[in-house]
Amino acid sequence: MLKQFLAKRKHGDAAHALYVAAVNQAREPHFYRDLEVEDSLDGRFDLITVHVFLVINRLKRLYGDDKEAEDLSQVMFDIMFGDMDRSLREMGVGDLSVGKRVKAMAKAFFGRVEAYDAGLREGSAVLEQALLRNLYRGKEPKLESLTAMADYVRRQYEHLQSIPGPDLFSGRISFAELTG
Picture 1 (cartoon, helix red, strand yellow):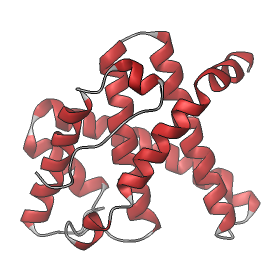
Picture 2 (picture 1 turned 60 degrees about the vertical axis):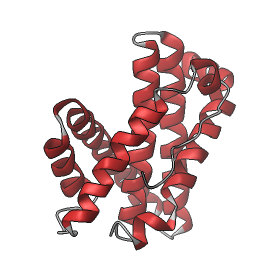
Picture 3 (picture 1 turned 180 degrees about the vertical axis):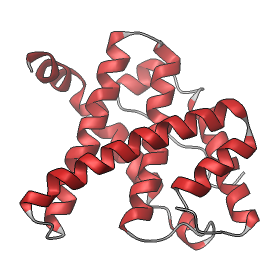
Picture 4 (picture 1 turned 90 degrees about the vertical axis):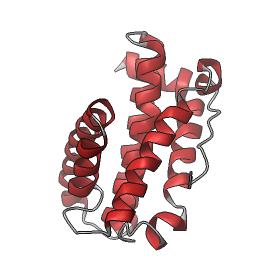
């Protein structure tokens, strides 16, 4: 418990800034208007998940087993799910249900992280299938939309590799242009 408190105290501002940047990117109308992501609670959660995954993935690749990067990632995750908890309560979800919903969302997050990570490692077809299952939740977007979304994820992954570690630890991050 003390370890988590100290990590949050040390990395809280940076993690919050990284999370806000990910959320702001996920709110871009382009995803909903042009790439057919459903503009719903689930669609927004899934787009936030994609962007938080990309940031955490960058931290993991930058520092490997470095404890500070792990702590920053954990604080960002905690901020994300604190925000999800707050959002559900604001929407009127009952106190007894919130914990179960957040737990299900966290489980979904980890499954998506695994799927997107595999997609980036194994190529376009695997990434497109992961996006189809998770971001589009099995609905059939136009092939162009699915391909454009997979291209976007790869482009962001590559772009984030260029952001220096000190910038990330200061909460400074930028995403590449929406269209490539």
